[in-house]
Amino acid sequence: MRSERSVLQKRSARTGVRLIILWLIGYLCFRCYPFLSSFIYSFTDFNLFGEAPQFVGFDNYLTVFRDEKMTAALLRSFAYAGFTVPLKLLAALGVACLLCTKCRGIRMFRTIYYIPSLLGSSPAIAILWKSFFRTDGPLNALLSLFGIQAVNWLGDPAYALFVVGLLRVWQFGSAMLLFLGALQGVPHDITEAAALDGAGPFRRFFSITLPMISPVLFYNLITQLAQTFQEFNAPFIITQGGPRSSTTLFSLLIYNEAFQHYEMGQASAMAWILFLIVASISALAFLSQNAWVYYNDGR
Image 1 (cartoon, rainbow, N blue to C red):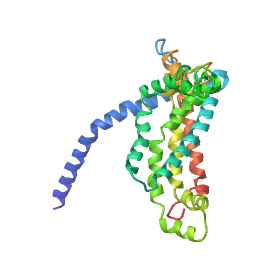
Image 2 (cartoon, rainbow, N blue to C red):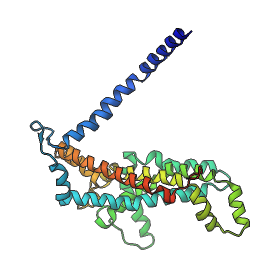
Image 3 (cartoon, one colour):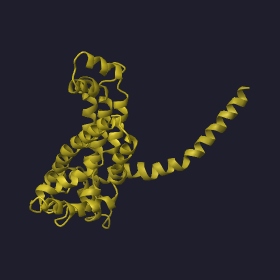
Image 4 (cartoon, one colour):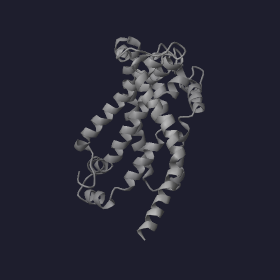
């Protein structure tokens, strides 16, 4: 009996290996190998079409903080994340609260609000966004109806980064769906009891609803920060990093170093710095969650 069971277990194990072997090969080739090789290249002077890589130690990492262009791009990425992530989370939470109301056709509205997240990362949408904010685009045409002079949204460094960031804020659908699910999970008896005790809508939201959906808020914060620091499509397609490098984020600068200047060693070091920044911010968020994230298990 035991021998038959062991034979069946071995057969099941072999079947499982055969089923995952292609995925495992792809993971090792296209995930693990680039990850490890970029770490090695980050310590080398490696030109894609030049000589063999030469070991330079931490020079590539130090260059990021010595070069004003790279330091400015890094600070610009922090500023970009600083205004897009809060705006996106506020928009997602606000729309989720509206969609929690019971009204006719609410399912259709939920679908409509999710569409930007399906289309937002598409290069075609970025091109349409660029057309919308052109000097002769629809937005300035609308403003002219009210006697407002046309604004050079994409050509003025004061506006360009904000316009690029609005595209990311517009893609709030995924975060909104998570908030919507969390809001629907808030027990109605608790909010009703608070209302009977005289708590108003704002008091109920900040004292009951927000703490109870804080795990989803925490998840959305981590994922949105990671995505925002890796933003590439919007600044590359809409402004190509201009005007005067005002939308050259650190991720776009990594691309320029790797595929325009072919400095793969420097680009790899920059990529690892970006990885460490995102990992550090995530670690700080996890360390701070005990102070503001409420879990139903009492944590």
